[in-house]
Length: 292
Image (spheres, rainbow, N blue to C red):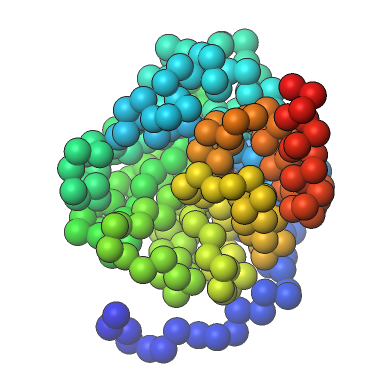
């Protein structure tokens, strides 16, 4: 990777970034409406969120666990802090009386049938996000991908539209099939996304150096759940992420592909909002699973 200068080392993860006047990192100078939308997603008591990600169908189709969102996901709505979905699912399946905040997938293009997934475009107008009363929108950013520049500009155009409308943008670090998933890459990707205006960032957890990813990103980071893991591994990953500076999780398959999704989301909630240790959260999961 060509660099004009060596990457710094003064991350100071033990010194949290100050949050004067508003509890979310890097958000104190945003407009009232945008802060209000962020406060719907991130619990003011803990400063964290358990987002339930169910947007997979925008390029994967009826993913396992999402074949019938009305049956598998709607019953989980009371247990999440926010739902990350597409506008098509929101309009067709999610009950309008639901009071949970909705963050909407705003990018799309290639399907899982294509080898190159970075060829995305903005796939949703910000006016429609406002019309749907969205608490935010999310967009993939393919740092290092074939269509890197386009995806960055997709995000910045969405950020400009969001600033006009008071709608936060979540930039999502999209990792290609051949890219190395390490702290150095995620420091670069998350920092670029924040520097170019996203109000928060969704990224993957790495076991080594994740605290430098969160410390060097001036806006909140939510951890992507990624592939389905055994429950104890998913709970441990979520616990480590928030202990190392993440402001919550945006988890999908590790919840809706669990054999007890309601029990799993309750366990994740305990880890994120109450700092419950992974083994205790697993005990909670198993207890709720038996009762359910």
